[in-house]
Image (cartoon, rainbow, N blue to C red; front, top):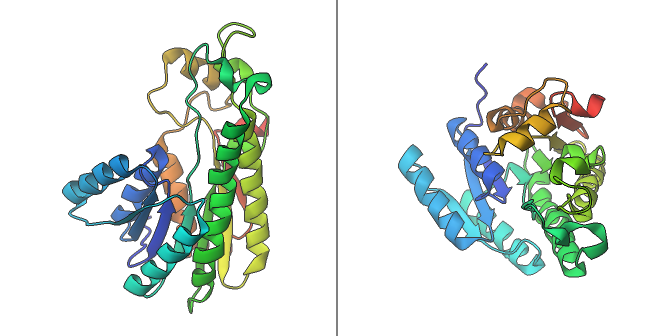
Amino acid sequence: MHISLKNKIIVITGAAGFLGQNFTKKIIESGGVPILIDNNKSNLTKFVNKIKNQYNFKAKSYCIDITKEKKIKETSINILKIYKKIDALINNAANNPVMKSNNLKTRLEKYDLNAWNDDIAVSLTGSFLCSKYFGNFINKNKNGGVIINISSDLGLIAPNQELYKAKKHTNSVKPVSYSVTKHGIIGLTRYLSTYWPTKVRSNAICPAGIYNNHSNVFVNRISKLIPMKRMANVEEVSNLLIYLLSSSSTYINGAIIPIDGGRTAW
């Protein structure tokens, strides 16, 4: 089934990251108009050029810090002025930790307060501010629109720390802020789903184990925890996103959807 997002104006944060890039491409392929937001100017510029060459599509992009309310307000007004509407928001930005062997700084007893504050600011404050401004404009559309928040299976279950360490007490673990922010995103989703319920649908996607050139050791470890015995490919997550953005899902609101091969069912 082909799903069309023709002429839908879709704002996506964290657009230059792994998921953001794949989401953006899928939106373009479905006929939508992605508006890209990211705070990494170099990566954002490279990606804009990449999709111009690949799709002959000149994407509008904004290099801003989504934790700054003034910037979000100005950007939302600018987008509305250019496109006359905003149909959807994808809250995708996050400080995803890079798990490195022997990186003890991610352990709870050594975790820096500044790192905690940064993660909370980007994932939660940023998502709140984007929802506050972009969501309000979506609500003013004649036909409303959609907010999709990207959470994680770790917003539903605790992390298995053995995945991230080779030797007990000597390697990195998933930092506490990651789980807390992903739980918080789910809370924000539920709040938003009842705030503008007749005009703005709000749902969360909770992916787990998306393959992105992980080591064979990690792939084997995590696959054992998943009933389907494999990691997800990013296309599977992108397909769910497109469905939730489309008119095929108009009665789905407040849903917290794991896409994890059955991992959270155990």
